[in-house]
Length: 336
Ligand SMILES: NC(=O)c1ccc[n+]([C@@H]2O[C@H](COP(=O)([O-])OP(=O)(O)OC[C@H]3O[C@@H](n4cnc5c(N)ncnc54)[C@H](OP(=O)(O)O)[C@@H]3O)[C@@H](O)[C@H]2O)c1
Image 1: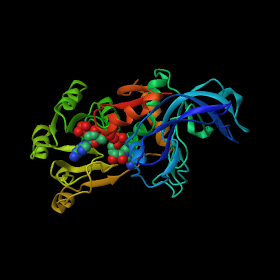
Image 2 (image 1 turned 90 degrees about the vertical axis):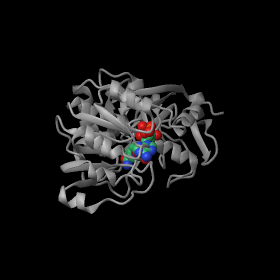
Image 3 (image 1 turned 180 degrees about the vertical axis):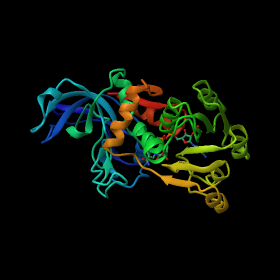
């Protein structure tokens, strides 16, 4: 054990259980700040990394893309005024110059760069933002990657407008719940799908106007019947039923996708695509401007993330198991 070490969640080898290890405490380099992480949160990506199903490093990884904490020290070139400030971390590194698409060097904290599931992390000062006043550190940690991805999906790519009919697929997912919040904040009429009746009821209690079980054979017809047509879909499932979305869209509708939890996309009927002039848009995470926009929206609307459960770092494997079994509704947070 090192005298000035830190505790961290550690993947020695993917495919094995996660460990808690004592590692060397980082120090802030030029233009960096050292953050004492208060809370971190899990994303599905961390689970895939743990299982060895993610392209990237396969061993000796500190996972975690989400985190919030307190600046403890600053490196050369950074104002000492940051010290003691509570901050939320933008997890993207090297987006590059084009706001439309990330550079080939783009990656996020947690692989290959060590992530937030550790007592300390050093990141560029450009990656830290003051924690919005209405949020606790626990809430702040739950936001970054999911809030960013959902914000870019809804606004930068999806052009979400007040009062539209929006469908959010797989509402139990940590990321799409942020899209749900954004759409509700703009008084959209939000419909949802889920594999669980209970999660659908939960969404209804949060303002969803209707929903369908995606396990039912006629879920798309059900949504079309209830809504009269959808203007914007936010989807992270893809899967064989993806093409059915085209049938329930209003003319000019947009389908935004950022994941494939349900596997490869099935057939998309072209007649709907061209006749209704639909747009199918891919999106991934977001740049620094998206992150700033997302935090502003959060502050203006006084939004709070939906938190499923908070686990102590020592119980990190149980936190991963909960995600693996899809038992969560909202973000799984880890107290460091
Ligand atoms: N490209 C990016 O930047 C980016 C960023 C974040 C996440 N993602 C991707 O987005 C996906 C979700 O990530 P997450 O962290 O939000 O994971 P998560 O919290 O584990 O959510 C996964 C959700 O997928 C839903 N689902 C499963 N099968 C489905 C189906 N057949 N149809 C519709 N929904 C289905 C489930 O919804 P119910 O529980 O309601 O059944 C489940 O809650 C992952 O594929 C992840 O890789 C991509």
